[in-house]
Image 1 (cartoon, rainbow over the protein chains, first blue to last red):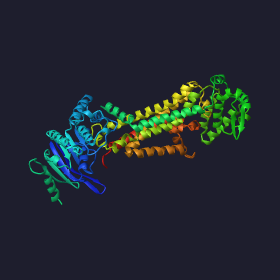
Image 2: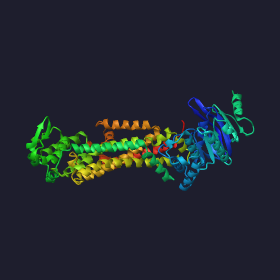
Image 3: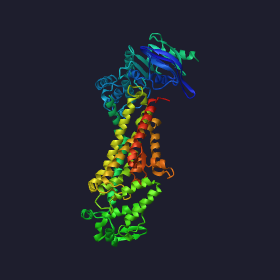
Amino acid sequence: MELTADRITRQYKNKIAVDRMSFTLTKGVTGLLGANGAGKTTLMRILCGILVPDSGTVTCDGMGVETEEYREMLGYLPQEFGYYPEFSGRDFLLYMSAVKGLQKTVALKKTGELIELVGLKDAARKKVRTYSGGMKQRLGIAQALLNDPQILIMDEPTAGLDPQERIRFRNLIADIGKDRIVLLSTHIVSDLEHIADRLMIMKEGRLLWQGEWNAGAGDLEEFYISKISDNQ
Amino acid sequence: MLRTIYRFELKKLFCSRVNIIALAGSVLMLILLADSSIAEARPVSREAAEELNGREIDGQLIDELKPALKYVNGTTVMEITGEYEKYVPVMDVLDVMITSIDEDIDLTEIRENGLYERREQELVQRLEIQGLTEKDKEFWMKRETMVQKPFVYRCHRGPGNLLRAFQALGFFILLLSAVGLSGSYARESADSMNQLLLCSRYGKKELYYIKLAAGFTWSITAALIVFLSVMIPYFSIYGLEGTGEMLQLVKPMSMLPCTIGHMLVVYFGIYLLAAVLFAAVTMLLSVITQNQLATICGLMGYLLIDLFVEFPDRYSLLQKIWLLRPNAILMNSGFSNYRLIYLAGRLFLNYQAAPVLYAIIVIAALLIGQRKYKRLQVGN
């Protein structure tokens, strides 16, 4: 399976958020690095089909991102989003399961599994408004995984997680990435160091560098800074 | 799955604190409104009402009342003392008639069928002012001949008060739609939930319709609850008596030969359709603006226009359409609109034509909303 972006561009008024980016994502974890305002979130939204590029196309094995089939195999965790305060964590996951098209029995099973996986078992029936930031983030991760997505796009997924949870989550992503396309953006470079198979570095809407990344290749932070500096 | 989404959409609406407070507040206000109209009503003993039941409201009855009547500062008032206490129920009807025909009528001067002659003169004048064609006038005069005269008094306080309450109900259902449904699409945008929903399998198409269904359910349920909050006090105190009596006991200037009960059913139907109409328009605004406050402001703006704007007679077509809006039909003076609507060569009364207009608006709102929803994007 391949997710292909072909010369995609998106402009907001006077700012080009994504500038003629072309790349192909295959199975494995791809880390997306870039400073704030580099265009990472805009790129991810375009890949999820919730933002239409001004030009260019995104396809998955020839299938457009606007199709129901594509959405069926997509999991997305945005950087920030609200929850329904009147819902419990379990309600929220059941609701998202239904919107994602999961059968009721599958939804119940999957919800139970994911609640356990993200460590929210004791709080599952509590209202989301009582959750801490970290708990909400874990609930967000759980919803992204509900439909066993073949394409998983996560925008700053480790934000708000404590160090122990971050390590647990990193391992989980590495495991998922073995046979799926995972695109993960973060500003915490160490989160990617050990799990990323590929890297994409963005600056001011442009794709500065992309290529394979080997965990033993050295310090990722230094590598990232050197790439950014080379371009200045 | 779709049923599960519907169930959760209902939960969003019915468990929302703001919606619960708005609904509870509306119920409370309407109960107080019903209670105050009951408290303000002149007390009537059941025996007195039963004694008058079936009495024609004619010159003879007015003559019996005359010793207790006085004409003070352009108003006919009755001194409710002693033997005249029993005439209170019929005086209530006479008060409504006088107010509807001409507030300056001096009842102490009225002889025999003078009151009905004044009513007919007023009706002819109104048909003239409203610019009705000869054919329209003929239509109404034919119906007027079918209205029994003199009017016959029957107890009708329960259904009569309920019929008058529809004016307030129409206002409350607009308010509840505005508060309850303004966020149905806009809130997803404000809370950034659109990001998750629009990239989910059913989030781009099916969710739009399910949200609509949940919105209509909210609006109709709210309409039924506020209706019951008025109906229960009136019917538990006054009973159902009077449902089968002539409409003119409540709306003296109506030329429709029908009963209060008949008109209650018609009004109830218009009221429920209004709930659907307001829900559809609110949700359309919610999709278009993606802003809850802007949606509420839009609807409150409409409410102000509804209350204060009237089209002059020279814009006949616009005026006819404008008078089909729910609150124009449900308002107490709605019966004094005699303009008729011609559709497909047939002639319709305003409450017969209104559902057609509402259906057109609802369908148009759904289609425009769907088109807009389909094109929704995040972050632009």
